[in-house]
Amino acid sequence: MNHEKRLIHPSSFIIHPLLLGAIFDLGSTLIHNQYDNDWPKIRPRMIADLTADLRAQGLALDADSFSRAFVRNLTDFDAQRQTHFKEITTEYTLRTTLTGLGVTLNGLDFSRALAAFFSFSEKSWRLMPGAHETLAELKARGLRLAIVSNAADDANVQRLIDSHNLRPYFDPIIVSAAAGIRKPNPRIFDFVLNAWKFVPAEVVMIGDTLGADVLGAKNAGLKSVWVTMQADTPYNAAHRDTIVPDAVAESLAKLPVIIETMNDER
Image 1 (cartoon, one colour):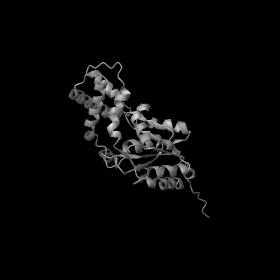
Image 2 (tube, rainbow, N blue to C red):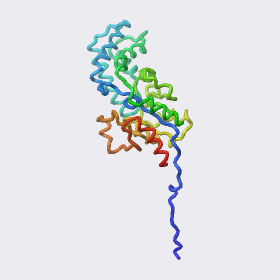
Image 3 (cartoon, helix red, strand yellow):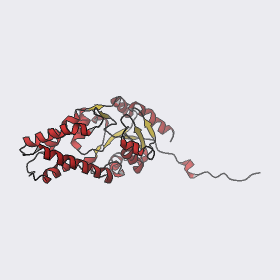
Image 4 (cartoon, rainbow, N blue to C red):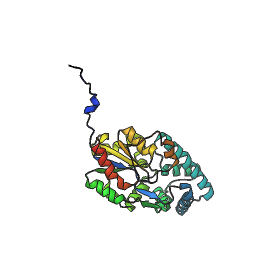
């Protein structure tokens, strides 16, 4: 008689938690830009609107000098925020630009100026197909929903959320401009996890960017779904073979089934 005992690895007994919450990215996930995020194409109009508002507030600006300095700072600061994952706000960039040009900032209404800057771009965003239907279904299934968005201006994001009637689905809404840190820094997800009192394994991150959304989820111990409606970008191409999501969705409508499958396979 063979009395050899079969060894069972302890991981065989692990039961993974159910997914109880879903965190969404915003841009190119729930909403898409009709200019395909070609910001150099629309930036001249945005800066012209900003310049007009600053002049209306009494600043004597040379439009060309201001535009060159502002674009240079936007580019430099964007390179920094993409590597150290600390947010550098558009307000900080504007203050730095004006100070560098020797402009006195006393009495300047930055909120008004930045609203003018973003006004044109905000009109170019549209809901992703099936956004409201998918969010309503996930809520009906009992999932908690949140937004974590990398963006340099909190008010800009809040206006986009309200203009597309997305706020009722989400609590909390975390914007890197307000949080001070950016995905993939895992600490940005703590704002949601602490609010919900969930452990990371109970939450899935849904977004279009491998290097921010999917890597951030992995760094934080969350599940991840890569949505690919607007994911054909150089950033994603650079990470396609090294950052692997738990699932891929070609449309938002696929998400309820994907999340259900993740729970069935736990």
